[in-house]
Length: 344
Image 1 (spheres, one colour):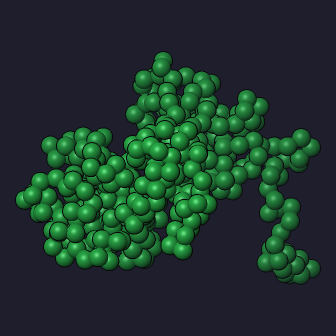
Image 2: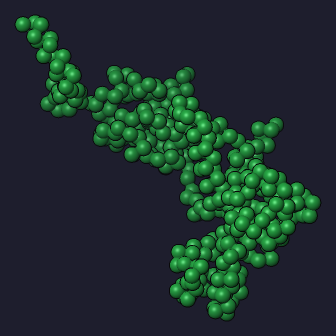
Image 3: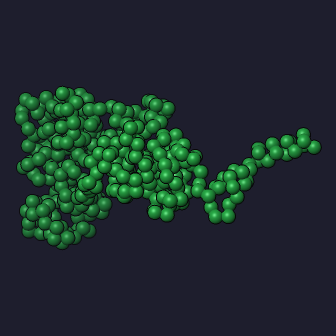
């Protein structure tokens, strides 16, 4: 039941729910247990803190777990904010934060810009604009003879702002640009409009997949031996590194990135073993790669040796793409010389 509630909360507010989980438990790569665990935790915590501060936190709904990641807030201060909220009701302005126990001027200066208050008396309290620069925005609205909500909601008014007029010793050009950019889309979500994506409607289960089908998918994981792609069935398919491109690929990260939308061709489906082999090559590349090459094998050893390049026209038998045999390294060269010497 706790798991079901957690999943439901992730739909409502993903960031505030995910911060309750140790970042290492989310799954951060195939070598996470092989590196220094202390340094890994420090780096992951730093990344989570960066994400929280970039997105911002709703001051009236955030848990103490989420508040501890806000710049300047300690665990004790986060607890005091939650207790103050429970005793006095929802915050109505950022200035009210100064009434919280242990909240000093420097701490307020650090954290205020990352805390958001929906339906606040001042609309800037629900933006990333820092209280120190509220006067700049108020001056912009006054010079344009409009209200603060109008300046936030109307793009044509913001275009009329003379940026150089508001530059001072404490407010630079970059700060003005950041303020105007934030006014375009105030609130917690910094992402752009999401692009709609749909899986193949005729494919619901693995049994619906047929060899040769071309279907849309989303990259869910990148490893050193290939890429896993979600194509709308419960099991992700594997695009082996040899099937990523018609040219040689040494690192899958140079070809794709996480959450990238791709078109893949179904090469082989093994329902019993729950393995799907996919290809991102063109029609010619798929024919050259051969059926079942590296199909679903995590070690990359599919039928006929997955990592060998297909035979090229004019190449001798057994030497297709084998560069090591053609140009031996210094150690192999010395070994050959010794063998020849003993034979003589």
